[in-house]
Image (tube, rainbow, N blue to C red; front, side, top):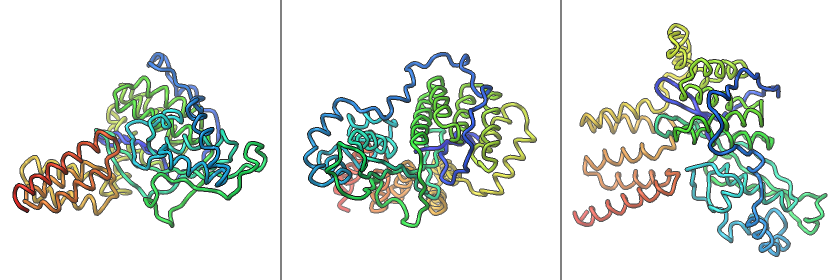
Length: 389
């Protein structure tokens, strides 16, 4: 799950870890400007997000014996794992709905949670969605910065469900990033409308990154309609407006975000950028001064300085800055490790270069990236063999 912030020259989307409770009031109509974007290229269908496909029903029928034998929750999870439906390898190229994740046999944590929930409910099992505090895990795609949130799902027998009368067992928690979270991390329960809104926001962000701002708008709008209390959806809407060249509409959406959650740092940073575009430099400077006080060394600053140093041929400064970035921030960003590997290769340190490439591979989030880093590791292995190292 991602959330976005627009700060300085960067767009950043955020989905909050420590969220402020917001009353479920209908969003102000003035936030939406449908005529600016026109109809979406593909209709947004929130009702299809949790829909069960014929292939999913066939799978449940085929695995019924295992569920009867082991109990509903455990049998469902074991059946998914044994059949290879659930994959712990991430593929976050796009956030998939239940049927898409099942067909692809992979997805990000949100996609796999949605797929598992759809299958469990088809069996009449109860589900609970949970968000786990990550403590500020950052990534980036182009000019979009992302503070990553994480969700999982627990499944239990529904004692009133006739279809699961023979199932036994307690709650089973399914986490697609097992071991990635601290056992002491805060956890809180989410309603399904929040999961739906998270899905729609993720899709809005992915479409925005693909320069499809009109489609991104309709997904952000649908997220707000699905869960008017989800502050991140308003922040995302503000970023969509700005990337579509509508700074005034962006400012309205971002100010509404701050009205709902005055402590929302990312909306504050986004608003500062929008105010610069609108020529309101004094207010923008005040917002940035407050952000600087709260976060003197923002994520990716040392990384960007390190890139500039490397491009200038100063590999020692680049190494120091990249390593300091890793020390100061929890970056789940494969390109940082790739560039650190390049620095170590410059100094002839093949062992450390390989270690950094292995980390880049581990943090890669699409099959294309995984193939790239695997090929680089193979090439490095061949080079070391040629040199006899």
